[in-house]
Image 1 (spheres, rainbow, N blue to C red):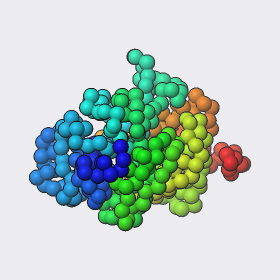
Image 2 (cartoon, one colour):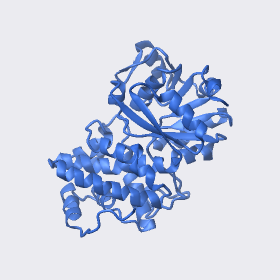
Image 3 (cartoon, one colour):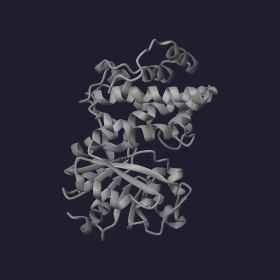
Image 4 (cartoon, rainbow, N blue to C red):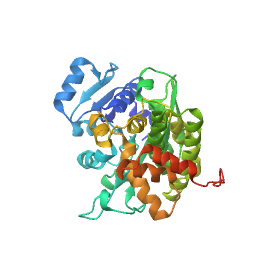
Length: 351
């Protein structure tokens, strides 16, 4: 396939959440877009109201609810589905996919494969073989070969307002990167490229842990010194754990790593930041999650990352304390006290 051969076909977006809707509108600046939602009534409502989740739809966006139609009409698909539902979505989509399809996902989460009868709650350690990125799920569940991801400081509300922003399209295939750049780039949205797709995926997932911790700091009323300390130590922790999981250092120092980390650690618009903030204000995790309209990927990521860190013997102090806050009853104040008293001497030792 050459770039020109896809210009006449619409591009598909799978998932009509906030981010999926906004990405559909960005893509619609350059071509026609089919926006998939599972529910026929939801698709009809979006079409009649010409808006979704408060975002007006570009005239080039058409809501659909048929995966077969989507795969038949589109050669390039952008799955924007929470990690918890990603594999199930791929299994539904897979019968309609062909080797010529290109999938570029925007999901910042992990998929876990466990033996029958086991659950994530009762497993003490996880290996990399049990923890899959979404590009790996796509390849496991379909005949698609050319896979990419997009990751970066991409808060949906700011992108919808056409504020300046950027993302990274990562893939082992340069063709996928160039197609993604051509489809997404506009005068307010820069697109960078990276060949380390796994590193970019892992960076985008792990920063959600630090975002929860940053929200907790803000909820406690602490200022910029504390946040600067958290972000810098959080970046180091991301590198330690990310390299153990197969990512390259460069991915964590770029737009999808540091760029996304700084953004989500400073924005009340981030769902993960909001979880941490509300925890620090005394709310329970169950109440917070029940009240949220979209998934905060970082909560499940904390559970997964903690078990991976234990298996690979990676020092991940922020992740470890946050795990105790979320799942073992430790208070945010107790976690912070531990982190401030822990003896650390070396600032950077991974370069």
